Length: 571
Image (cartoon, rainbow, N blue to C red; front, side, top):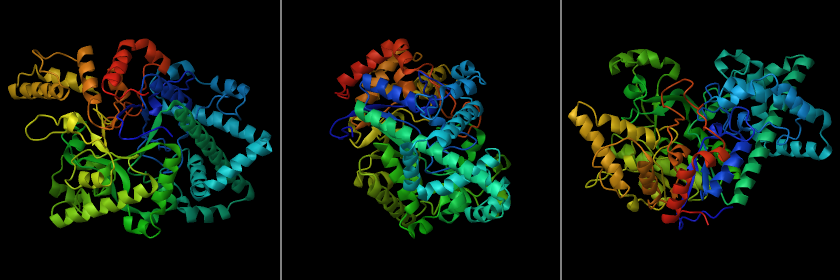
């Protein structure tokens, strides 16, 4: 395992797997592309590669709207004969001939085509495995099934039913008897032998897919370890209401409300989000029900993450203290747009969005929420040793959250333009606690290039207050970076890029992990919260890791200089 002592400041890079381009490419990043990217990161002195969740996602392709807390997304599998032993070259050639690979490689992620192609390749590999697997390979598959039986058995049946229903996980559209695990098991008993065999065949296929996925991801970790690069995974705060978890264990969820986040000034992506907040659609956890078996569901999930990753980011840490939720599903959001609170109550029986299990309106409520979060993070630390658990503590942070994380030695996030204190525009990076992760943006935010140019555009506004505020924001960021204000505002350029990168890396934080877009000074956007459409989760890097070296020589030379100057260069 790479040395991750907080005594030494470390630099890394955030890049979603789907966004990576590999030397072999089927329209989406995969485990092979990630290995190539990790090699690139190590070559430039970056010691951490942070990715987004890689659990299997649903029809909206969001890595945070997962249909299994355990299963890995089949799209991450490198489906080439050299990477997939059971895939014959002739089958690969025959299947890929039916797709326009050149167009798929050139475009942003076309999920429908990618999934169809990878499904066909994996099906061909599975058929070959069933026909030709030797005793050693069959034993390895059987061993995987035995080790993961607790979650794999219900998942494989659930996934078979998803396939039978046209790859739709929307449980409420399934026949009633199939909407729960017990009901599905009873339904299977009524089938003919031929139909039961088909269910088992599909289940076996999905067990095989997970075996291949877990095997390839273990190879990714082994590769990173040889490079001295740590891999940081991501635990989504919720699971889809149509997930295998809800289907098989509904008793550990509160299905009456839909989790989300309160309105924030930083997000103005759509009117609903600005008015009511983000309605993610995930069911809430029934923490009391989970406590009856000592949170076995969470422990199983965390242990699987520890086996794959050196560092683990916990999404929306604030939600483990108290979580904002809605009394309606996201599909109904449009009904509530522009309604007053009284009008909304009339549609919900008097209920409104708010924090659960309680808000922070009284000191007693705050203390109960503090204790609630502390218990849950102590549970996580029993499975993930500090400080390798990283808490994404962003948003409107209650005053008790960061003291709890500090006592437990759990690093939180520091986004410079949001960290403010009396007497100075932005909190100096030199005062950041060592146990923290500094970055200008997460996957939800625009890169520096974009928000700097947005400020620059506002400096030309005819509204003096607006123009003055934009100028103050630009000067505040420059001051954070140790630079004097600009004599005259100007658009983002190589000088601003150098200044902002140096300022981030100079912070006292143990980890400094900018997005790949900020390292390269580009404007790619991976997600716009509250928006639904092709712009989310589809953006890809312009080129492969080798192409980055060719096209961004000056930026990478600058990066290595800055890492050396700030003591973050990998040795």
